[in-house]
Amino acid sequence: MEWLFFATKASFLSPLATGEKLLLPWTASFPLLSAALVLVLVLTFPAWVAPRLEKACLALARGVPALVLAATLLLLIDNFSRTLFGWGSGDLKGIGRAVPILLWALLAFFAWRWMGSWERGIGRSRAFQAVALVLYLASAGAALTRTGRTAEVADILPGKAARRPNILLLGSDGLNADRTSLFGYERDTTPFLARFAEEALVLENAFPNGASTASSTVSLLTSRLPTETGVIYPPDIAKGDAAYLHLPMLLRKLGYRTAQISVRWYADGPDLNLQGAFDWANSRSTAPAKGGPALDRLGQSNAYFLSLMRGRLEERLLPLASEGEPQDAFKEVHGNTIPAHGDDRRLRELFDYIGASDQPFFVHVHLMGTHGWTFKPRRRLYSRGKVQNKNWMTDFYDDAVVDFDRSFKKVVGFLRYRELLDDTIIVVYSDHGAKFTTLDRLPLLFRFPRGEHAGRIAANVQNLDVAPTLLDALGVEPPPWMDGASLLRGRPDPCRWIVSAKYDDKILVFNGTLWTSVPKPPWYTLRSLSVISGRNGFTLDLPTGKLAASPVKTWGEAGAECLAPEPQKVRAFLLDHLRANGYKVP
Image (cartoon, rainbow, N blue to C red):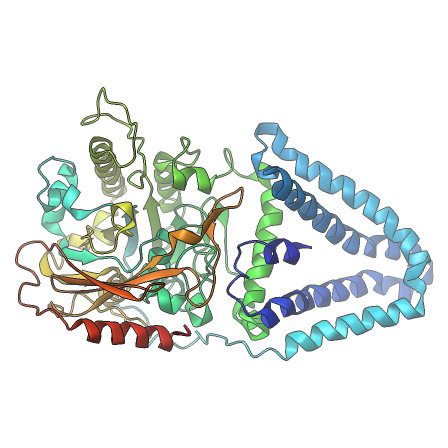
């Protein structure tokens, strides 16, 4: 029933071939059935030694299927109410969040009693036992014949890091560089950032690789293009070895504790199938489960499907264990209410996490104040006395940028107070341009311990360059699967091609919880690809096949020496890129 819920709506199953989609319930059931079988055998073992314990052992073993059945029914009820009425357990507030726990306990009790009558009746039928055995063997056969790839991550590091400073990756959603006084904006929107940049490596012309937060986040952490990772827009999830090969995994292997403080589904590593990335993400423990890569051998979708089910059950059964109200990703991303998990809370979570251990940390923080379409600045400077009656109002956006500058000042002040500033690499970035553009410059700067590598680079760079630069700073050779280049190894080629992907907003749907897309072949969630070379930009619209040229504004004289590439060469390059990454180009 859980599979049916996802198979009949826009979900991670949508891009899968029909055969793989139909096989998933069988392959995903095998590890669960095997674990349950072993557990029941262990619970009934004493009855074999002492027959008088048979009734007690059977009553105890009966609890295993009873608890599983109760959990399944709980999900079924919630799926039913959300599908028909647009309302589910996530909408419960306060003490009402205990209702799913009480319902689960009640369902488990009746399931336990029902299992007793089942044992005495059909459960003792040889025919039923034979059918159950055949079904189990079919599940085992479907699972064990899978040929999914497993990322071998044991020996991908050439050696230990030469040094291990803390790493803080701090982003502000949808922030254009030309709206910051750091890059010459007439309004003083980023006074602290401008002073801070004096001891940082400032990239004057940085560009994104994705137009959505999901695609940009995964590309940032993997140093691979969205067309390679498979993540363009939810419900896309990381595919192939992109699910296991990423910066957080490398840092965990180097002894870092890792955390992500962002927004669920749209910028959450575990939700986007970055396996083994974070120990803690968005108010929940996400410590990697043992055998995650091994499940990939049964078909990679299994690991994600099982982790998704576990997470959905935890959200219903463990709501009182978390602080405050549950995060509502839709409301925060689409801005129709004041979010429960705002940037102030993210900063508190960051400060708590930093102080939790002496182990070096890697924390990815993604702030949402500058996201748009509308803004909720804490303080009204340029928008004072004005009403926000339309989207993307300049004065409100500028106030949101001022808010980010103040938040960043708090972060730096906290690190300085804890005497961690000169033992921390700080990266400030944005995921995409305002209004989800890919041809606008973004702020990007690195502050290394004690102001090392400070200066400015005028050549065009991209968010894919962040991960290789961080590894290089640690004394670790960036792996060959990263597409970006370290910015510590000389001036990048000013005319290199920077590729970005944009989602298809014409296939977006609201499913009652959040906006997702309905992937359809041959482009699925992809709408267009863009190329930047110097000051020359090109965008290929895939549904129409039209290639449009547009100028790119760069800071200073950057890119002026780059000749515009021939349009046919750009088109051929992009189509070859799509074919190489599994797209069937008509």
